[in-house]
Image (cartoon, rainbow, N blue to C red):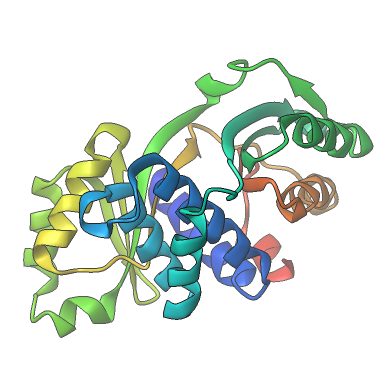
Length: 251
């Protein structure tokens, strides 16, 4: 399996674990809120909102909860969330790239710095670690959706390649599709034209290379990553630690 597809698979499996925790709903609601603030509450005319709703459905958020989130985001007293990112190092030289949505930047940066210091990491200046990651569009599509639309796998994948798919693999009943960042919108549009709804679609920071550690070292790094992901202001944590199947099983 190629590097990007392997990362997509790991992120999907980890996402399935995270979906058991209520905080995943909070993160999706924040994304809906930002999308509404940015482009209004008309799903048809707001691609970011349309994508946020699709991702909400992908984590089984009830329709009434989605609608309440959209309505609340349009209220005058709704919180204004800002998108901010932080970069740093965990133990053993593992890079971490942290994406946040926050209504209080001072609180967020203080928390991020605290987590890193506690776990022997270090906060770096903005842009210091960007060269270690590629920005990629990553789509997770249940295999059953293709059958429901009467599409054959080969024809479906050829359509996606024409729309800019760099990698497309079928594993464990899911298609993991990777695109260049600039082709993300094209892929979203193509799937909409085909009537295919992705379980998850987002821009991710995929490590160009990974660092392999022994189990004890890796677990120390994962404690930091878990602490970051538990923070309400954190939307995503990307890193270049190599996650083996054994580590995933323990998580």
